[in-house]
Length: 150
Image (cartoon, rainbow, N blue to C red; front, side):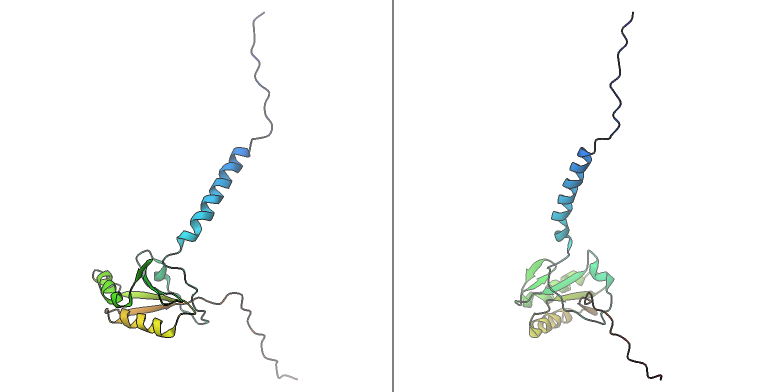
């Protein structure tokens, strides 16, 4: 009688533990990387009801000047002094057709600091200047006025 090897029994349930491990590792990676995706310096921008959309401000090559609450100024993610803004912006705009610069200001920044930053940007020969704001979240429209029909 010849020896006939037996196949192992068929497993009915798939093993999902390795897949769960991979998913948890990916979740941790995304949780660590997501805060780093914001371009420029994070500031709490002012809220505006009638804000105009500026999709070009999210581009990688957009020039963004940020003014923080304590008066520090940043060009992109690099801190810069007020008197250096004009020269740096001129250098960045020299080879560009789109001469738009965006200013992100903290809602609690001093008005004078923001005006000084805007003046320095304008003196660099900027054609278009965008002030970035946020739309208020969760605001419900007021009810319509009561009708006068009786």
